[in-house]
Length: 348
Ligand SMILES: CSC[C@H]1O[C@H](OP(=O)(O)O)[C@H](O)[C@@H]1O
Figure 1 (cartoon, rainbow, N blue to C red):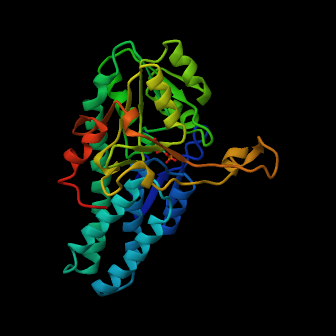
Figure 2 (figure 1 turned 45 degrees about the vertical axis):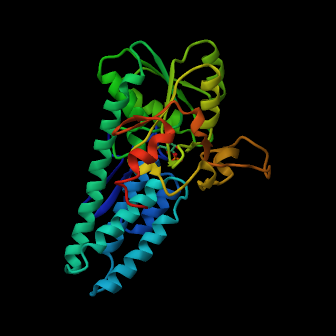
């Protein structure tokens, strides 16, 4: 797989996911505002991926700060962090990564500014490396939920393209495949931005993992026919009570899975678990440009000019519909997360 995001010769290089699957193109961001714009425009997307990208955006922005004393430097970097934090509201990884970069900077206040700048780059790369390791650990912990010969449904893209590499839900699927299991993946196209059609299908075909693309409204019928044995999806924010915010349509998949007695798993690293948010009702849900619904890629209208549109990018699946949360430390009941992750993880 081509890297989703990387620090390359002093710029933040992104695989431009808005061009996939027809074009594999890269976007070199030379300032933090370009990084924020790329996150806003879904050129890079996926909770862990935008966390890593925002961290690199902080390091990139810090490089451009001319201040010679720590307080002025920290103030300028704080403004850069605020700009990046305003790019998208739902994925908690964005805020987790920015807070981690701020904490790192605070530990360096006695260092020369050039040293601090170099350390911030290193911290952003550490976040990238950690994310890949977390995804692979999730794969190891979660692969057993997909049996040999089974068909697994996934929604949106929670793959290498949504992370620093390997993926969360697709990491579990990759691990099951790498264990030699004859699995088959059903990928929801995931209207309106089509992350399933454009990204998940592309990723799995790159790895020669059998995948069948369906439209979102087919999932229930396939479940009723007994053609799906398990569902595994990603997450953008998991509240303290185990409610899960994920791509719009996830709630429908979860309810359909429950109705058909199909296990429904969510794969997410600790950086997606937000114990400061009590329930799903407290998770901010991003509403996006109506053009995403009324056109394909901003052209080819598929609805009449001026029609009213509601375009929330995410929905919330209550914890009761989640069989288990697959994390790098194991699989937990949604309600047990606070006990498992509460102690070690600093807020935000
Ligand atoms: C592994 S997190 C991926 C998560 O992010 C996606 O949203 P978007 O493409 O808008 O960033 C979707 O909710 C995925 O499940």
